[in-house]
Image: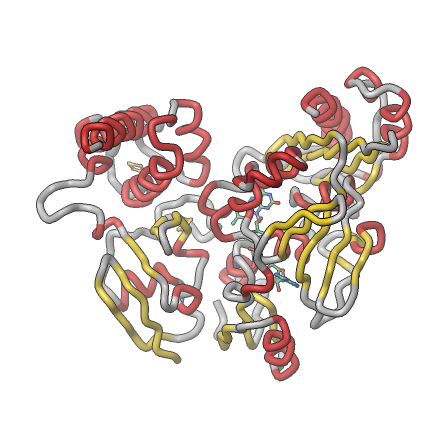
Length: 265
Length: 162
Ligand SMILES: Cc1cc2nc3c(=O)[nH]c(=O)nc-3n(C[C@H](O)[C@H](O)[C@H](O)COP(=O)(O)OP(=O)(O)OC[C@H]3O[C@@H](n4cnc5c(N)ncnc54)[C@H](O)[C@@H]3O)c2cc1C
Ligand code: FES
Ligand code: FES
């Protein structure tokens, strides 16, 4: 790891002003992506602004039909929250399947959504539930937030403060984890809302990161069953292809995971 | 460089270290606690697991500075004098180790999972919970047996104490 300067912020505004003073700074949340990247010398920020002790980024609350999760909330705390388990069980299950227990004790929802790894789990829930990303300066709808692999609508010094998820009637997440890293080879989040609308989003598989699957959404709003999506396939041309799996394999996995998610919801 | 202080195994410690110092290096090099191991550079093997404020974390994936002010427990802090911790004793009894390289991390992970699950720890849960710990020797079977035995023993000790 290259040299860096560590700063601990006590509030969102202090974090923003520390960042403004830094040469080439980066926010540090759970560090479960940033520290491995720095160890590999793939990132070399001059300054690290630690968000880990900021109280206003913590906490899970219910308000007006949605569930608001502070950006600094750890994966283990989302997985173990009675409120999340009751309102959006698919989200609790997703958080409990990220990495391993030690990663879940450190990694945060804000860090995961800021990073937007194409194989990360949370983006699928943010997209399928039509969540809102709250930041230090504005609210961003899920549709506008994800702009491609490792790319988001966040400005350089913008801090995610919380994410609000509309509470669905039913939801579930199914992923096929890479056996070594546990990241998704394909993960599908399905949600049905009280008004009958359905949203389906897939992660891990697409070349541009998380994406919705309109054909599955239409089929499921007419007939909520695993059979309804069994013969709907995504275009292999748009899928990732790497040593872990070919594009055809991933396209097939998306359909299989969608079936499993509907069956589990 | 900055002075980083924390409580390690019940003792207040501090050291002047570079900001980029990982917690595992702070423990091994600044504090001489070499029981915590480094087995990979990809945050995947779990040989470096310690408890920070009571939770199992990978000390190779955390800066010492992030743990400033925290309470840390390492493998050296588990035994009570000459008496091994029940999980340590169970690993010995059930041959839960061969070369021993992964063992400190396995034991710290095991203590953490037993604290979270108590007597409800079954074999499937133990195997799932061990996803962040790699062993190249044992094939895991005896590690799982040792953890199950320790969990059962610790649960019965708790019942007896009530
Ligand atoms: C062994 C291992 C296995 C893993 N497996 C999975 C898996 O199965 N699925 C999965 O989804 N993830 C997995 N991860 C990644 C993990 O979920 C990370 O915790 C997550 O991607 C990043 O969150 P973090 O809090 O650790 O962020 P950090 O690593 O601290 O930060 C990541 C990036 O986000 C930025 N950032 C952080 N917080 C904010 C904020 N509030 N506002 C703006 N920017 C911010 C940082 O500047 C940095 O660029 C794994 C990681 C490891 C080490
Ligand atoms: S040394 Fe920490 S996970 Fe391998
Ligand atoms: S006993 Fe040798 S690596 Fe586990």
